[in-house]
Every structure is written in structure tokens, then in C-alpha cells.
Image 1 (cartoon, rainbow, N blue to C red):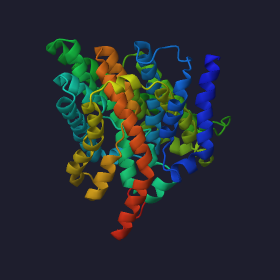
Image 2 (tube, rainbow, N blue to C red; image 1 turned 180 degrees about the horizontal axis):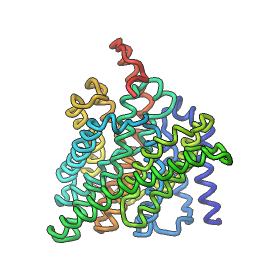
Image 3 (cartoon, rainbow, N blue to C red; image 1 turned 60 degrees about the horizontal axis):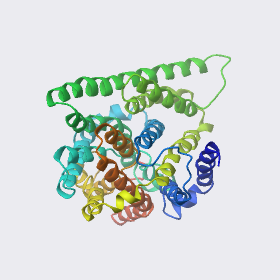
Image 4 (cartoon, helix red, strand yellow; image 1 turned 135 degrees about the vertical axis):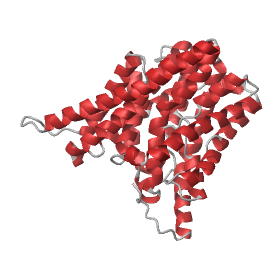
Length: 420
């Protein structure tokens, strides 16, 4: 079988099927599109297609997963930036500071504590596992921040908070992931210097500046072009996909964080795009984003490390459940009095549960395994991601409906779309 034909047939065919049936799958079958793609990959894995050209679990395979995940995240965080209301980050910077400055480290430390307690791994390895599993996935979060059911039943303030968090913390998680990696691979003094100069200054702060600059240039260029008599009305959201790929590639070439830069570029580009956006192209970003977002789940399903999972002790499977239940909900219960987007404990539990672990975790798990040669990080990380795709992918619709009934029972005066 021709390798390219196999890739195109499986990836594009699955996206085509989901494009035709997405409403039925999400609203009637209660299954998210990533979960369906994962199932497609699992179903095809016994056929042992060899079009990947690499052995699952090898360094080449981890590199492939990392690069595919990087491009997927770039498109996803760009979409997250474009979904946010204009100037959302500026108007809600205090809440985002709490979520990213306290919530993200709390998720990292809770995952690390569970790993140290239940997996019997060294402290730095536990911290590495916890940091890899900390970021909230923007692709899996889409099931409660977008779509007809989410728009009609979940307040915009909750959806926007989760969108901003999932877009920003995928890049900012690098700060946490690199701490144990550097301590495992360098002397402490050298690790601290590398973290400050190489990670904080270059891969985070410089990425923010570069992303803002690229978004500003692209936005100004589009506004100028649309003002010329020769211009044609094309989709600004289509241009945003090109901006996402340009940003993530260029910033990665210079050794900085392309994911974080892409999110910032999207926020800056949004400011200019609303001036020229043709409303007829409203769903272009969603359609193109689906084509880039979903195939990575097929790739993941094709090569799940079943043998490595079956060799794990029972404590690893217990850890998988514990980290989904305890990594995030307790933190959001503690933080919700400080968060304007969450007004009561049920809302805190709802947003606490829907902080899925997905492509960002795969990206960091592959990089961490490659740099430290600790295979357990990939084995445990992939197991938790698999469980998150299944559990969050099948619980979104019923829990949204349950939340709506709870709100109705309390006779809340809130409108579902308030609080942009």
C-alpha cells in the first residue's frame, strides 16, 4: 500500500465522515470527535499499516508524535485566541493570572504528589510526570466551549475562562516541564542558569514578544491590503491558519516556544481581524481547524503502547484514575471564590472536571522522554491521555445537560450567554 495514500485516506476520510456526522455524534451519541478519531486509530491498529515508517515507542516515533502535536497545538491555540471576545485577556488579566500563576502549578504539584505516592518513582521523575500532565488541552476542551449544546447551556464567562486557560497554559507549562528535565540532565547550578536564560527569558518572554510582533504585522498588513482598491475579500480566519503555521515554524527555528508565540499572535491578530472579517467565513476556522486537529488522535490510536500498559503495576492504573479526579477539581474548588467566572461550587466542579489532558501532554511527554530517556514518562503519560480522551469525550454532553438542569432547578437568573 502506498504510504502517502494510506495517510491521506485514513486522515482525510475520518475528517470527512466527522464533518458529515459531527452534529449527530456530539449531540445524540454523546461522543466527542477526538474520541471517535482515537477509536478509528485503535480499530485500524491490528491491520499493522507500516506507513509511519517508525516503530512505536522508538525515538523516531516520539519525534514524529512531538512534531505532529506541535502543529496541532499551534492551530488549536490560534483557534482559542480567535474564539475569545475582543480584549478578553486585558479585561480579565487578574483571573488569568490566578489560573495560570496558581492553578497551573497546583495541577502540576498534585499530579507529582500522586505520582510519587502511587508510582514509587524518584521525586524528580514524579515532578516531571506531574508537569507533563498539568496543561489543559484546547482540542479536548472544544466539546464544552464550542458547539450548539455548549453555546446554549454553558455561560459564556465559563467557556471563555476555559478557552483562555487552555490556549495560554500549553505554552506556559514549558516553565514547569523544564525544571525537572534540567535538574535530571545538568548540575543544579547549571540547571538554574539554563532555566532562567534559556527557558524563562528566551522560550517564554521572548516568545511572547515575537508572537505579539508577528500578530501585529499580520493584522496591519491585512487591514492595509483590504483598504486597497485591488483587494479581494478572503477569509481572515483562513489567514489566521497560515499565521499559526508561520509563527510556530519560525519561532521553533530560532529555538523559542512556538506554541506560546502562536497564542499571543492570535490574540494580537484578532484585534485587526474583526475590522475586515467577512461574516460569510464564520465557520472557516472551525472547518480548517478540524482537519489539522483530529488526525493526531488517529495517529495516537494507531500506536498505543498496549504491551507497556499491560506490564504496569495496578498502582499505575489507579494513578490514572486518581490524576483525572484529583489533579484539577480540588484546585478549582479552592480557587473559585477568587475567580469571577465561577460563581458557586457546582460551577467550580464543572470547570474543574473539564480540564482534559491531551495533545499538550503528548507533546511534553515525548520531549521529556527524548531528553531524559525515562520511558516511564511516555508510558504513564500516554495512558492518562488515553483515559482523558475517553472519559472527557463521553461525559461532556451528559454533564452539560446535567448542569443545565441544575441551573434551572435553582431558578438562576443568569442567561446562558452572559458575561463575555
